[in-house]
Length: 219
Image 1 (tube, rainbow, N blue to C red):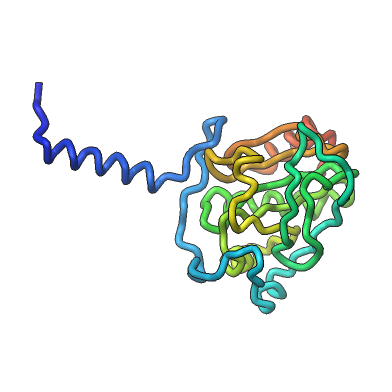
Image 2 (cartoon, one colour):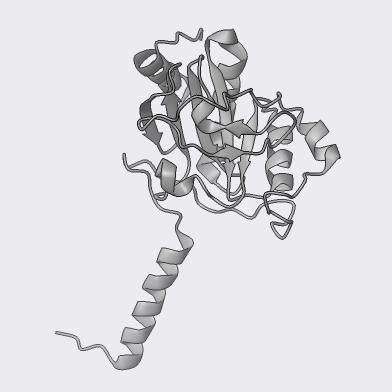
């Protein structure tokens, strides 16, 4: 048996810790979660909830207005948390627990998350082709608004997103294992299904919508 010297043992431990710190985790169903990539512009921008995104980036992204949400309806134990988040673009702040009346897909994403970036177009296509039968809302988590808006503008993604700069949804929505995570919420506010990890393709997304929300999206 090979005996490690104290110095070798310390080096092995350091490498193991570094590997843990550089990983963003994996989704509960085995799909890889988001790996951090360097955002552009720099993430040194102010990410406090009171920070305002530059008007030119908001205009370039051309996001749909954030949806109205019911301020008074009681939150559900099996629904989204009772948190109100500011709109990434234009429109009102959104009370997550108050998103009622229309089946809703809520995708938690970030510009630094590689798999998140890859699946954004799938949700954009669904948002554009489902009409009023489905609502698509993003939650841009632990990100900075300029990076998020720049990505959406470049990708041509225009459905609304709210901002969770501080990651306040992480505990209540259980996405601590990594991003992206997508919640399929029925019109009564009940979470019907949670998809951990990226949606693979348009066929998978259409199947999930039909199976869990009863929404048929044309291909």
